[in-house]
Image 1 (cartoon, rainbow, N blue to C red):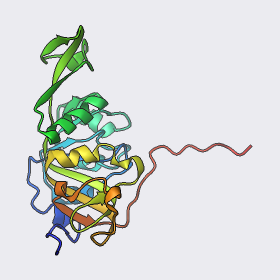
Image 2 (cartoon, helix red, strand yellow):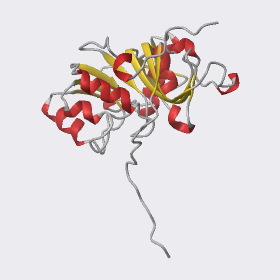
Image 3 (cartoon, one colour):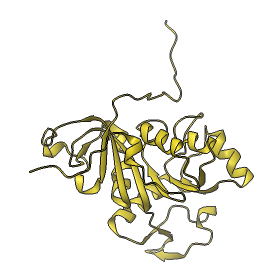
Image 4 (cartoon, rainbow, N blue to C red):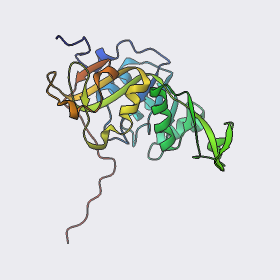
Length: 235
């Protein structure tokens, strides 16, 4: 059986039809597991008014912070702004709209989007600014608020290995948000460190089936920066 036409030559060709105003979920946690080639391709594309959904929007001028520095981002939904002066400054100036979401709630809103669940109730954020403007109920004596699912036009994920069908395998904890994101986007692009023949990944080791991946390309070279390097002095 021949593989479907999911394989692209590079990141630029994988996102050639990205449009202004698109919403993009981007995997990774901090700078770990970032789809670096896809981020650079978006930066080079010049597309603007983007909505980015990610745990954080880059750090120390790296990762997704490149898109902020290019003023390509109109809105960001995520959990952590620390270590990123670009998002802080652009939010304070009103250039970028920010929705800060508790990390567990962010993960569940994305998962719900992929599962076709429009909304859910959670106790997280009750009695705080997170609850402002949201429906509140009481279940089993516990106050809960309504959170809506999140979906996106695109999901950019990075995986350790992938094949032409889009079946991918992640490395360690880098899969974090990426499984849910791939299921909650209209078009998922997988940036893989190694593109292997179909069947080379044992079925039990496929973390994300190719049915959730529309495009895949190989990118062997990555910077993989360390956010904060801490060493102990020799005794």
